[in-house]
Image (cartoon, rainbow, N blue to C red; front, top):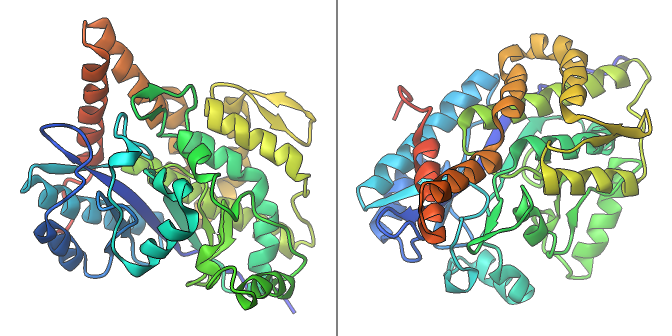
Amino acid sequence: MSLSEPPFTVGIEEEYLLVNLRSRDLETDPPEELLRDCVARGAGQISLQFLCSQLEVGTRVCRSLQEARGDLARLRSILVAAAREHGLAPIAASTHPFARAIKQKTSERERYVELAREMQAAARRMVICSMNVHVGIDDDDLRIDLMNQLAYFLPHLLALSCSSPFWEGEQTGLKSFRSTVYNSLPRTGLPERFASYGEYRRHIDMLVRNGLIEDTTKIWWDLRPSPRYPTLEARIMDCCTSIDDSVCLAALMACLLRMLFRLRRSNLQWRIYPHTLLAENRWRAMRYSFDERLLDLARGELVPFAQLLEELIELLREDAEALGCVAELEHARTIVSRGTSAHRQLRVFEQARADGASEREALEAVVDWLVRETAAGWAGADS
């Protein structure tokens, strides 16, 4: 019996931080009216998150990348317009350039109160945001099989998404400092490998049965079977400041999964490599984005990221054509040529310092840039 093709639907979730336009710092006590307005206008697609200064949006289940872009743009436009009425603005970045974690307030939602109690100081450092991409894979065992193989490409996704070079006013030297903060939580990092969906469930059910986790929403791997939807959910990525970058990464993930499915249908698969080697590429993506080479594990040597990307685009061209997202996939070349959000934030900071700004003023200039770039790209979206 032939294996039926998954739907490869796409959903994008993004978390944003709310900043005060006067101080450029995080708004620790956003007005209840603003939060209610955003939730109501989002019609279930905008929700409060762990921090009081944090909101999440989630697109509908989208049949194309163009549909996903339109819905994401609409949701950003709602937040930007509502926040502006209160002197606030959302920023799409995984860390704020200078906000202090100790000054933040956490949500009173029961789930987040329990998280703060359990994780203690690790949770109090969670002034971070991410982007999660869901791709529809409606067969349980296929979802696990593709998760095992897609893990190889997680560092590539991270490298193209970096947006957290600053932490509490410090240039961290990492392009994705968010990842180091998130790694302090349990059940994070590269996904485990399982021979089947049944094996996955046996391991997870042991944790639930012993009261270690309530459900699979407490599994926070870089890639996981979604606990709510028939999807694979990539969680390794920083939150992209540019909508075009977000959609590019969603396209890349969808195309990768379709390519891996094509291999499976031909009784082939992407080679499974040791976690040690995947973790090395993951670290290099956190540290350098794509400024330094990644390990090509088939060659057994370091290769420039731009070369790896060109090979990947050609490998996925058939899949991009089938999914109608060639332009979205090829936007990855633009990210490499002009830089991720992390690269661009650092350039804004360095230019401000060169122009005579103090360190604090230069960090505020980065916030101003993030405000503008987060709001860009949604003109014409339905409100």
